[in-house]
Image 1: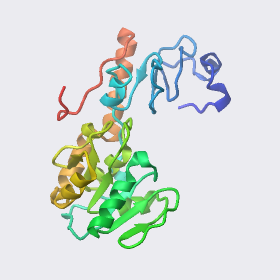
Image 2 (image 1 turned 180 degrees about the vertical axis):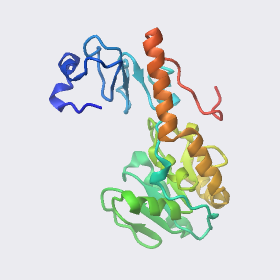
Image 3 (image 1 turned 45 degrees about the vertical axis):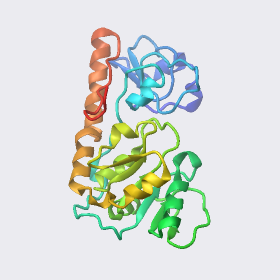
Length: 265
């Protein structure tokens, strides 16, 4: 891994001196229009490109949906280290709080979680940037990370991820599942690739989410953890990237991504 000054990122030619001479392949995490020197290269695209913008050569996206929206079938799902999360194997209770964790932006759909809490009186903890004004059953705890975030995830009845935009991946969903906590999501972006009926519910309206929340606690914490460990760990991600590297070195092109089995073709 090589750290590069930001001013050097505009032109691939300026990156060549940073690449060791014995490197087999270069993996960039920012867009490149051409290879940095004579090295084979790939690049992971971490955001949505502007409409009509063609993807850079050898681009790897974060999900099948992310890839398809950029006219590609090449993707590698993100992965996390399960050891970074507290797994609570005990069944969730209806009385436990719900959790929203993320930017307090309308695209993230936090207002659905807030509306649900106001309508039902169920406890909701909101963790993220910007300080809103909440009362009643809603508690704002600000930005969290590390042990505090892990504890909040592990003790929640469920995570609300009512995305109103096509997010390339959505790591908070995997963080919850590794904690044994089920997820309420929408059909937007990558969420249908991450959430199965065994570990959560996908909804299209706030009314559907409120109804689904009534039984979300019946999901098995062990099933949530097992699903994330099978498909979305750092080791699974690393193996997929190694497959990408090998294919590029052997054929000069990237292979198609591997969707999770529950996602229809």
